[in-house]
Length: 357
Image (cartoon, rainbow, N blue to C red):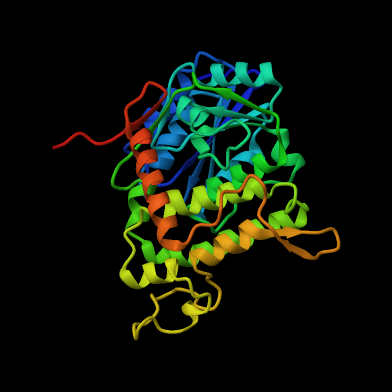
């Protein structure tokens, strides 16, 4: 079979894959059905043990716009970063191997991005409507359409060794560095919920979440420190800390009572000693994990003066500090509302669940 030389791609679609043989064919087929012809699809097989690699290679033999790369299992961030390094399109788009997109998805996003000459275009009505345009704290990968030169110029990659919240951190850093943002509510991405999907699996591994929080904060601190953003982007940081780790990751998690005490204690030193005679959850770095209240205090109030001195004063746009019980009630309510919004089968953002047996 003769393979014709593909046109220069406008969009590079990066598909990280790990054991998604059940859904991968539908995912790739939806990319091939795009009304926009000038795309390339970069599939990164992240050490799958099922037939995902074979499915990807078969499609690459049929369509010269599809390229496959293999690596040992290093996680979704490493797979996306490898895809970005091999991309040649003007824009980057991310589609997970168990999801799929509408036929006009890429065309809508390309048109919106070119009209706005934007670095980042927000994809889907749910994410376009969720926050005020100048107050977006973070986005999932399915809501990101990114000018390829932007992460290259700013030395940005997905943080490896981080999961979950790797996409939230990446998009938060992008949003902190640009105000050239467009919106495309017409773009429809179909996100699939199933037992082996990330959101289901994360809820079963609460012990893995707690040690991850100090790593999130360390990456944030390093980013803001190196780029001198503490003062200029204080409000952006506050919105992210409240939204991404707390609303989406912490308050809806089925933590055990000892884990909840660690998260919501008002005592900064509490994680360093037993909780009412109970042992710390196994694997939790006792000396490095600040309670939730301390995280809010540290990141909401911190501003750095040019000389390196710290000013402890709330940014004007930051909401007032909430005591722990009020904070928990506030964010539980917000998380529930967000879940209802995201869970509906809207025309703009579909959450697919398995049919009952």
